[in-house]
Every structure is written in structure tokens, then in C-alpha cells.
Image 1 (cartoon, helix red, strand yellow):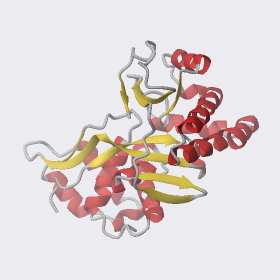
Image 2 (spheres, one colour; image 1 turned 60 degrees about the vertical axis):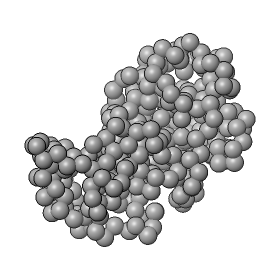
Image 3 (cartoon, helix red, strand yellow; image 1 turned 90 degrees about the horizontal axis):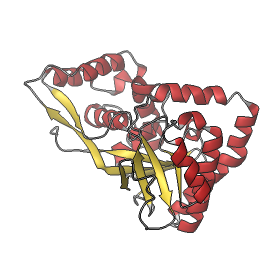
Image 4 (cartoon, one colour; image 1 turned 90 degrees about the vertical axis):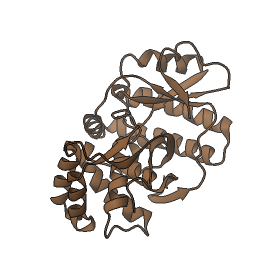
Length: 290
């Protein structure tokens, strides 16, 4: 196997922000616009990130499932993960790297079972931002959409990118770990947990079902509900410069916004009602269609 044979795409979590950490429903799709792959640059010093990651992996229980000696040797020979995936944007840059390590250096990983592989990948991704669902590297590893429902996992052949769906770059940095900690703290509030379980999760389920069945009107209504509930439940994850856009979308109903992963910065998803030009308020930011 050569280092240039495989590319590992970015991902977009269409639905399931934070609830995926509670074994809730989620739908994630690969985003081929950005990707990473292994390359060798022998004229450079060993990658500090890969070096630290390899050392960390060697101290974990799953180290027996990886050829870490080979990884270390390749790092010394100039192994680099060359990636166009923006970091800190919610598009799975760390997930793609984890998938690449698992693919090239996996020894006894459960490749026959996506569910078991997801657990291994979640452990491997812990290094980058704490608790992980393992979904990001799984999508990048298989290069397929992944549906999580009723604690079961299904690989889907279709990309499932809905029409009139955009990624808007807030141009703001973010760190996932503190946001996940905030979510864990909010789970201790009875009202938050009730609204999450009784209203938000059912809206996510309806959106996923509509997306898979390509029922775009139903998808729009479900996504508008999700946007409302995220405005109510996850306001801390919506940075102040993005809040006026979010609020206007809820008021005029020409578009709606939702988190893309943890929120806090990076990319946000925008759904619109038609193919008409995007409202000027959105065009102030870099934005592209899925």
C-alpha cells in the first residue's frame, strides 16, 4: 500500500448535534470538497502532532490493535497528513486523521463491524477533543453517509445532501471540548433535559426521516423546529456575531440556521426555502452549497 492511495473526506453532521453523545439519532454525510491523505516529506522534521499522537496511542488499551512501531518509523521518515479540511470548523479534520491512522496502521481493528469500529475510532479521537462519538472518523473511513437510530448504525450509499442547504463559515475559531462540557453541565437542569428529550430529539428524528425519504417540505418544517430549539437550548453555542442571522431566519422564515457539530464557531448549516438568491445578511460570510 502506498501513502497516496486513499483520501479521507471531511464530514458534515446534518442532524444530531450533541444528542449523538446520548445515543440519540444522527445523520452524517461525507463532504468530498475537503479531504486529507498521507504524504511523505523527507526534507521536513517529524510532525509534532503525529509524534504526540503516536505516543498517546501507545499508552492506550487499543494500542495492541495498531501498528504503532510502523507509524513511528514512518513519522521519522517524514510522514505527514496533508489535509485541506479546515481545522476547528466542525468538518471533522481530526476525524479524517483518525480514519487515516486506522486504515493504514490498523492491525486488529473490527473492520467487519461498523458498530465496533465506531467504538475503537471514538477511543482514538479522544486525544483531539475529549469524548467522541466516533462518528466523524467512521464517515471518513467508509466515505459513506452514516445513520444512527435506535442505537443502531447503518451505512447509506446516497450522499443525502438536501437541496438548498449551505455551509456558512462564521470565520470564528472554536474548541470542541469546552462546548461538550457545557452541554454535559446543562444536562443536569431538569427543564433542559425535558425539552431535549420531549421536543428536540423528536424534531431531529423527523428531519432525518424526511431527508432520507427526500420529502423536502417536511424536512424544511422539521429543520425550522430544530433551529428554534437550538436557539432556546444551545444559545451558548451560537457566537454573538451569528445570533442576529439566526434570529432573522427564525423571524422571516426565508432561511433557518442550525449548528454544524459542536457550534461555537466554524461552520453553521443554513437551509433555505427556495433557490432564490441568498439574503444579503448571509452573503456577508463565506458560504457554499452542499
